Length: 164
Image 1: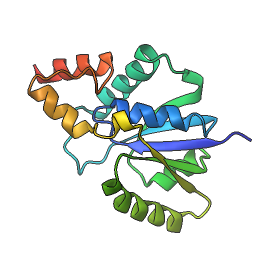
Image 2: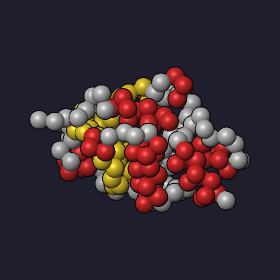
Image 3: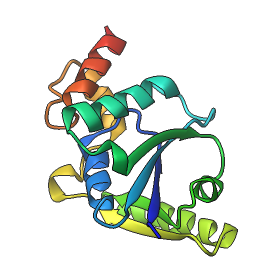
Image 4: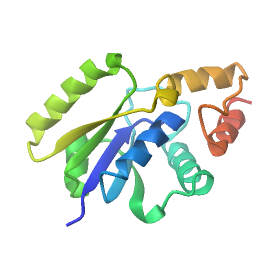
């Protein structure tokens, strides 16, 4: 039986921090579903379809990750429902700093209450990626700063096209 994990997030846009967690996840699971939240409560720079395309280009073209190990989907449901849909037993969550922990801890507890068969695994970003957030990437992009240390080539291109 293969081990399937779900890595949910907004990925608006995907950063080297997210990619770091994806690469680490692939050491723990056989198949990873990168799930893009399509919540109407947030104001996104990129549409869901754009985020899916950016993720595909970033992961498969720029970084040459294996397509047979990663599936990219969007979702509007509870994460545990998404896990059931894909027979995933693991939710992957990335932690950058201690400040992330309280929210993530509460979220993991809620998911455990919703479905006690699904485990949440926390993976730490590498030190060089701890400070990267999609919010800061968008801000640097809006101010025409250098994004090379934060995101892949496809993301830089998408940000420039979106903000011009």
